[in-house]
Every structure is written in structure tokens, then in C-alpha cells.
Image (cartoon, rainbow, N blue to C red; front, top):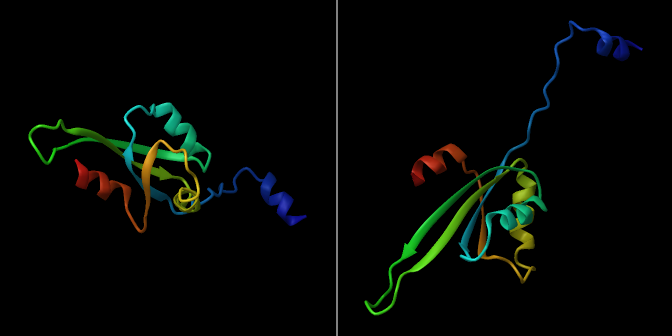
Length: 118
């Protein structure tokens, strides 16, 4: 009975649910033909996304005769750490993916990571 009266009391402060730790993954060598929407749909299958940061780099060829190859990488932050870990584990068993490698970044702060990259 006391619990119901506390909830009915309007002066009682609202308790915000504390979000868990966020998980960050690094996706390496995304294929150039992959669209951003298909990547987002794939990542959303594992959990809610908070932020994504894409990087484009051109690899320099070893010889002068060949052209450079475009590589795309991204950092994805999930709202829950377990979602990022699940993606990195499931990646090993899946075959038809639009990227080559996924790494779970343990104990990584998003702001320090982006500040380092820019």
C-alpha cells in the first residue's frame, strides 16, 4: 500500500533509469558498394545504436602502376555493451557480410576516440 501512495504523490522526485555502459565496435574494410542504410539495418538487428562515425581512406599502392584502393571504416556505439559484444562474436559465424572485420573496443571512451581521429 505504501508503494502505491508514493507513486501517486506528485512531489516525489522521478527516478531516471541509469543506462548501462555503452559498447563501441570498429568495423574495418567496408565494401565500397555497401549503402549506409543497409549497414544501419544490419547493426540495428543487434541492438539500439547511439552514434556512428565513418572514415574514408585511400590506400597507397606498393607500385606506381596500380591505382590506390578506397577503404571505408566506421566506429559504431551501441546503447548497451552486450550488443557490441554480441555483434563481434556473431560476426565470426556469418558469411555474407558487407565488411571484412569487426573489433570490440574494450574500455573506450567515444569522445576521446573521435578527438584522436580528427
